[in-house]
Each structure stands twice: as C-alpha cells, then as structure tokens.
Image 1: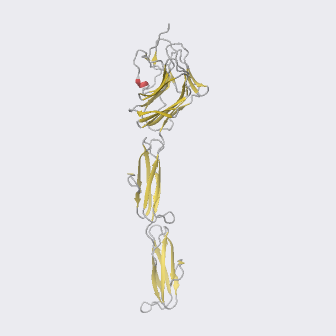
Image 2: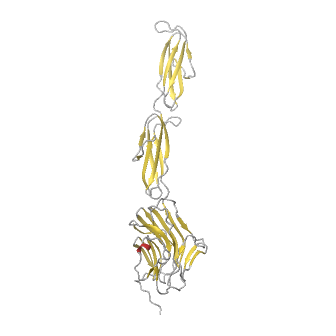
Length: 399
C-alpha cells in the first residue's frame, strides 16, 4: 500500500529560485529566457535520476517539467547568472501554469542560496528557507499560494490553472507583488537580494509519489539601468545672436522612469560641483558654461550635459573726433570732418549711426563732413551684437 504523505513533510517541489545579489548596473534586462532553445543551454541539471523529465522548447516556447510517477526524485534545473548586474531596483516576472493542483505539491520559488543541481536535502531534514525565502509560488493538496519575503499574499483552491503572470518588483527595499497585473501584496525585503534562478525540488523523498506538472512560458529579470534625464531652462533678457542682455537664471529639471531622482548637481565655468537646490543665477560679462547631471536612487548617473550662455549687459561706447581749421572762440572757419569710433568689450559693435541737425539717421561707414555756416549738432550712437544700444551722444560743430 502506498505510504500516505503527511502535510508536515514538504513535498517534492518544482522550485523557481531567485537569489538576490548586489552588483553594478549592467543592463535593463540582465536575463530573459523564452525557452526556445531545446538544449537548455546555460541551465544546470541534477544527475542520476529516472524522473528528470525536463523539456526545453516544448511547443516551441515553453519549459515543461512533468512527472512520470517513478523514482523518488523530481527534476531540478537552474542557473547562477540570471541576476548578474542587478542593483537595488529589480523586477522578476514569469508566466506559468500548473497542469492541475490535485497531486502533491509543486513550487516556483526564489531564495538567497546559490544553485547546486546535485545538493538536495532528504525529507527528514528541516527545510532550507534560503532556497525559497524571496518568492514562493506553491501548489499543495488543491491550494495555490504565493509568498514574498516570508509573507503569504495569496491563497486559493482550485483545479487546473490557466496561464498566470507573477511579478515581484523591488524598489530599494520595499517590494510590490502582482498577480496577472493586479497588486496582491507589499512589504520590505529585509535586505535579501537574488543569487540563482532554478526550477525543481531541493528534497529527496524515499518513496514514489505523484506531482503536479508545470509549464513555464518565459522568465525575465529587469533592473534599473537607465540614468535620469535632466533639462536646463535659462531665463533672462534675450538679446540678439544668442546673447543675453542680463544675468541669467537657470532652472534644472530631472526625471527618472523607475527608481526616481536622488540628486542633481551643477557647476559653472569648470568650478566645483554643487548640489542643485533651486534656480541659480549666472552673472558676468562674456561666455559661460554650465554643466549639470543627475543621479537616480539606483546609482545611475547621466553623462554631464552642457548649457552655453553668453552675457553682455553693457552697451558700446562711441567717441567723436572733429577735424577742420579752427578759428577763434571755438569756431571752425572751414568744413569739419567728423570721425566716429565705437568700442564694445564683449559681443562687439554691430552698428554705429549718426545724424546732423535732427535729420535722418545714417549708418556710419566712415568719416563724414559737416558744412554750412552756423552752429550744427551731430548726434551719434552705437549698438552691439547683443542688442545693447548706448544712449545718444552729441557734439556741437560751430562753423
């Protein structure tokens, strides 16, 4: 007569174990397997078993582990590289189905112990929590339950299961557990992080038994690799040719799609980096370079971005030089030649203009002559390339 299995014994299981490791951010998707490779390349398997029925590429895209009712050991497969490069922000998701939930238990689980295909416990030993202390999807005696980090979040009875998708997302400590897109639990990791990914049972029983078959469609591991994105918005009196005619206030704004922005920093003209706490002002004539960057909570830092500013707040200065035959009392006894000279120390002089006795303004191209008896007034002014215009100046020319 078949020996009756008691609930106090953990059943031979199908375990999906995921172990958490701290590492550098290497990829947004460090691992994905749709099980299309019939050879199961990269997966390790237990040896010396008559019941090791593991089929990769089943129906082209499934992993199928099934029971043939013989022998005391259920299949065990796994790998230790699926979580290489994850950081504190990671997500494990998988799509699976139990063929039924009436036979002895089958489990998909995650834990913090490395995978060893030939290292199992006998059923009289206490269960190793570190093989399934992160995620446990367990079927036993008609029940289907899901645990995360030691807390049960879902438990329901039933027969055959349809395809289900479970997602465990960890965000620097807190986690969210979802089943088929709906949140079923939250909590904290307690510092536990993944080492291995595996399917099977860590128990060896001393008698034959029936176990629920299971199929896994795909499994995916993701981590936050993308750095934040920071934009700079300058504000000031806009002049011509890309110049500002005032001090410039700079506002930085950073966004991050997953872990969130931890900090933003900036520096001006190659100076020391400063933590951004709010808009800052760039002052001083001439060109300036503002560099800025942000880091997210996963430790990803974006490459420094650059904002170039040109500031010119000072108008040109123009002088007039008069040349002619000077008589008595400051009067000229000849026509007078007028030369204008303008300087601008920053953006440069764009144009100089003049007019005589309130007439039309003319662009200055070179010396001009004032003639005719009487007192004349020459007005002149210059504008620089930033658009700064000096106040109109004047000189009297008595002839």
